[in-house]
Length: 122
Image (cartoon, rainbow, N blue to C red; front, top):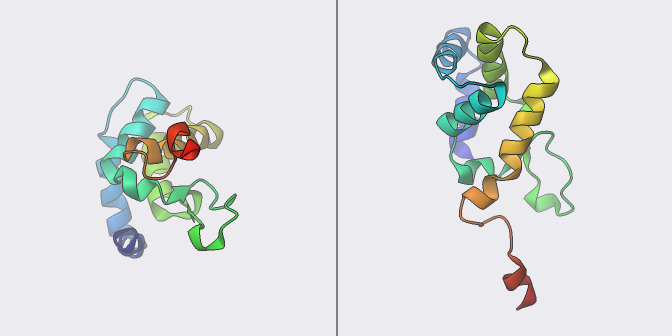
């Protein structure tokens, strides 16, 4: 998470933000959802994504509270890159694609964030 904090500080600069948007703009895909998935996979690991969710809420254990992706500069860079290529992009479709990708990050990270039914039975 420290790397993410450092990246957020760097992305406060206008030059860094423009460079990041330019990097995301060249990432292709046939649909909005595919582009979003590719941008997210390009920018973070599944382990890091396991510590994020869209709004940073819905965790009963305060010590394990997730970080809100929608408030990050990285999120704004991704949306700016998408709107440059896909003029019909809206915030709702973008949010849905990001939420779906973040939801399954613990499973892609080897199940570190979720327990299987067999583990629960033990």
